[in-house]
Image 1 (cartoon, each protein chain N blue to C red):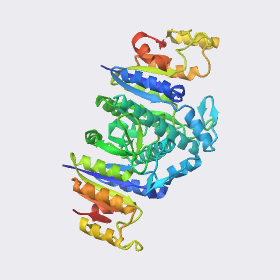
Image 2: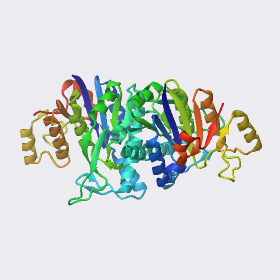
Image 3: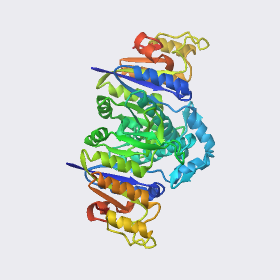
Image 4: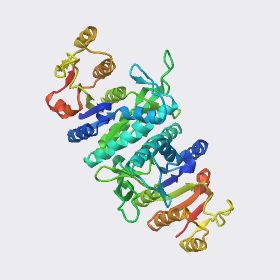
Amino acid sequence: MQTLTIIKIGGNVIDDSSALKRFLTAFSGLSGSKLLVHGGGKVATQMADKLGIQTTMVDGRRITDQPMLDVVTMVYGGLVNKQIVAKLQALEVNAIGMTGADAGTVLAKKRPVKDIDYGMVGDIEEVNSGQIQFFLHQDLTPVFAPITYSKSGDLLNTNADTMASAIAVDMVRHNEVTLIYCFEKKGVLKDPMDDDSVINELTPTLYAEYKAAGTINKGMIPKLDNAFKALENGVSKVIICHADEVAAAVEQGAGTTLKK
Amino acid sequence: MQTLTIIKIGGNVIDDSSALKRFLTAFSGLSGSKLLVHGGGKVATQMADKLGIQTTMVDGRRITDQPMLDVVTMVYGGLVNKQIVAKLQALEVNAIGMTGADAGTVLAKKRPVKDIDYGMVGDIEEVNSGQIQFFLHQDLTPVFAPITYSKSGDLLNTNADTMASAIAVDMVRHNEVTLIYCFEKKGVLKDPMDDDSVINELTPTLYAEYKAAGTINKGMIPKLDNAFKALENGVSKVIICHADEVAAAVEQGAGTTLKK
C-alpha cells in the first residue's frame, strides 16, 4: 500500500513568513505522497478588523456570519492557499490548492443551532477520497484551505484540525496514512512551562491521566481528541510536533507520537 | 475529437448576483466539456478602497503593487472563485477552482518594465494543456481566476481575456475548442448607441474597417485582438455575446461570431 503523509499547519506558521518558508522547504523534501491542510492565522482576524467586521470566538471557534465567511474565504481560500501553492511550485512540488468545494472533495452540513449559533460553520459529512486519490496518482499535492461546502451551494467555515483528521481517516481506504499536526511547541508537554518536556508517546490512558491532572489543557483537547479519533479509525500514525521538526518527526521520532 | 467550450465572464456578471445565477444555470446546461475563466469585477476595487489601497488603472489595466496583488488574490482567487465553484457544485457541475499556479496550469513571467511599471502582472509563458485535459477527462470543470505564477513562486495578476484566449489556443491540441467572451452587450455593435445593432459575423477585414471608423472602440480592441488571435491559432469558433445568451449563442448563433 502507498504511504501518504497528511500535515496540518496552523496560524503560527502561516503568520511567520520565514517559518512558513522553512516548513515548505521541509515539506517539499518529504518522500511519498503528501497532502497539506492549513489554517488561516491572524490574517483573517486582521483583515476583518480592517474591514470593520467584528471577530467573535467561542471556545476557540470563530462565529462565522456571512461577512466573516467572506473574509475567511478570501484569506484562507485565496491569499494563504495560493501563496502556499505558488511557493510549493517554486520548490518543484506540483501543488493544487483547494477548498472542500473544489472537485466536491469535502462535503459538509451547516452546524445546527443548539446553545450557540456558529453561523456558516460546516460539520463534515463526506470526504471524496477517490477524487483526492486521483490527484495523488497524478503526482499532485493537494493543499486544502479549511473551507467546505453544502449541497445547497454554500461555502462553510470548517476547523482545520477536524478537516485534516476527516481527510486522513477517509484516505485510509487507499493508503497507509501518517497524520501530523504541527503547532508552536515541540510536542505535547509534560510541563507546559518547560518546552523540552515533550511526551514521546501518548496513549489514551496517559491522555486521560494528563487531562485529569490539568497538564493537558483547553486548546490541546480538541486537537488530541481529533488525533485519537483518527488513530482509532485506521490512521497508522499520528504525530504532534513543531513545524520546524516535520522531517525529524517523520524520520527520527521527534514530537509526540500517539499510540492506541 | 472532443468538443470543449471555454467561456470568459467579466465583472458585469460577477457583480450582479442574479445575473451570475442565471449564467451559471445556463453554463451548467451546456453539453460537452467546459471551462470557465472569470474576472473579478468591482469587488476587488471596493475591497482595496475599504483597505485603504489605491487603485490605479492605465488603459483599463490595473497597476498591481504587492498590496493590490494580495487584494486580487483574495477576491479573485478566493471569494469569487470559490463562490462560483460552490454554486456550480449545487448545479451538479463538478467544478474545480484554480489559479494558474494550481497544478502548474498557467505559467507566466512578470511583465518587464518599459514605459509603465505594471507591477506584479504576468504575461503568460506556458499553458499546461495536458494537465487541464486530464481534469476534463475526469469530468471536472476547471474554473480559473485570472492569476498566474512565475517560476520563482510569485503570484501574478493576469488579464482574464488573455488567460481565456491562451488556454483556448493551447487546448486545441486535445479538443475542438469554442471560445466565448461574455460581456454586457448582446455582441459587437454596429452602432454603440443601439443595443440591437449586433454584428452577426465579424471578419478581420470588417474589424479593420470598424476600427478605422471608430465604431469599435477602446475597451473592445484588446478583447477582439485576443479573440482573433485565438481564431488564427486553431480555435474553431469565437463568439462574443451577452452572458444571458450563452446557450443561444452556442445553439442558435446569437451574439457576434468571429470568422477568419
